[in-house]
Image (tube, rainbow, N blue to C red; front, side):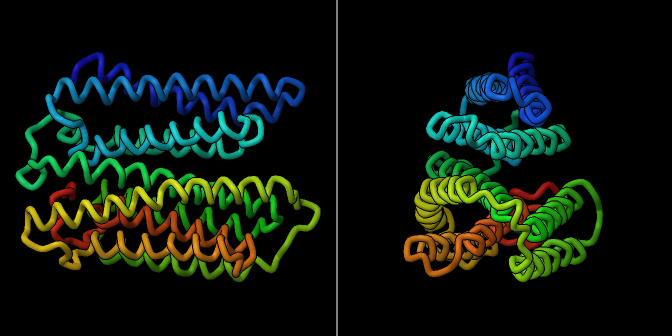
Length: 333
């Protein structure tokens, strides 16, 4: 990796962390809050530009489309998270969506940190494995990565929505569930813990956490309700899914075409393929329920958080928790 690429990537990582702390610090200076939030937006914009240049530089250095391993996909994911938030903030007024700003910055910083801890072989530019030597790679993978980022933002918006709906117990339950799922993935990446323990931690923890949070929706802190902000973040969650869902659809269709080209079958019920389908169905259900208003908005917010967990399992879980399958070339060990 060239020094320029390292410098640009580090700049993006540092600015995501700095942006997070500026968003948080804005609470302490209420008179200057609009200007401080504007500064956080500007810092994140610098990081987004730096990361864009880093990805382009990596592609030029590698002389190929720079999306072939976990490290490169994490760069794209952080790029999509940062870009999507900047788009939402510019569209909806960045002062109004600052709660999502610090969550988006924290998510980008976490993925930068996760990527920085990966083995050096992931950072180095290396020849493609035979399974990835295809023009389908740049057609199939980018829509999926961007859709995952949009779904993450939707889930994060769901958490903020629940917060302003007064469902504080449910929020804490979902946060604990997401942290537990991320812990399972981190252990699966960097430790030698038996995979069945990790699978039980992720799947079992997610099921129990979601059930607890769903049942806890009855516990409402009425003095904390802010209907206008709840409605705002409900709208943001829907906007993110409206972008992510067609991208996931494109990714699944092009994946089937690539599979037929490489393996002679459009669909083989590979674990990662199947999980992508489950994720697609979950967001199809969300869109149906949202359009027809068949359930309350607080329950829809939980559905978007369930989608975040499914997205996390589809994106990282099947390569770190030992589920195997035809996509096992993406595993680190």
